[in-house]
Image (tube, one colour):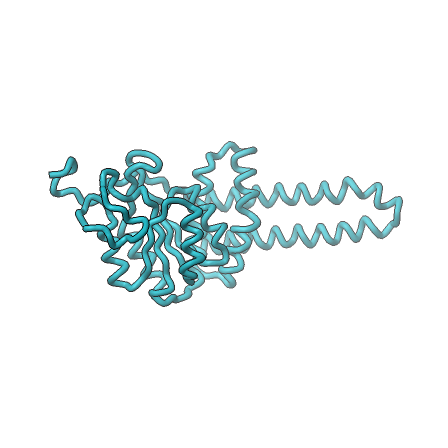
Length: 264
C-alpha cells in the first residue's frame, strides 16, 4: 500500500484564489491613466522647444500623441467590456492588445506603484485571457490540440520516465498522468509532459498545434501565453499542496472543460 492509501485519487487541492474581474478592470484603467499622463508629458515638455522651430510642430506632435491616447482609451474600454460581458467583437484582437501591450504596463503599475503581488495580477490575466479565448468561439480538430503538462505533476517517487514518452505511464493512480492519458486517447488530442518552458516551446514548434491547453504555475503560464501569441492558449493553474515544483496536481475536470470549449 502506498503512503496515500488505496483510496487516494490524485493530488489534493490547493487554496483557491479568485482574483475577480472588477479588480482587473480597475488596474487596467489605472494603467491607462498612467499612460495618458505620460502621453501628456511627452507632448507638453517638448512644446516650448518645438514651437521655436515651427509653430505647427507642437500641434503635429500633439495630434500624434492624441491618436495614441485615444487608442489606449478605446483599447482599455474594449477589453473592460469584453471582461465584464459575454459578447464582444474581435476578441482575438483585444487579446493581442492585452498580451502584447497592457500586461507589462499593468505589472509595472500594479507592483511598482500599488504594491499588488505579481501573482495576483498574473492570476487575473490568466482568467481574462481564457475568457477572451473562449469568446473567440473557434472550433479545433482534436489532432491540432496540444495539452502541455509540467513534469512536477508526476508522482515524485515514480521510477518511470514519461517526459520522453508519456504513454510509459502504468496508470498506478498516484498522480493524474494516467487519467490525462485516458483523456488524450478518448478525445484524440496530443499530450506532452515538459521538463521546462524551453522544452515546452520546442514541442509547440514541433507539433504546430492550432490551440494549446497548458498547466503550470502563474508565472510560467503568463510568459507562455505571451510567447505563444497569437496561438490560442487556455491556461490552467496547477495545484501546489506542497509548494512550487513539488508533487503538484491538476483539476482533471478543468482539462475536460477546456477540451469541450475548444472542440465544441
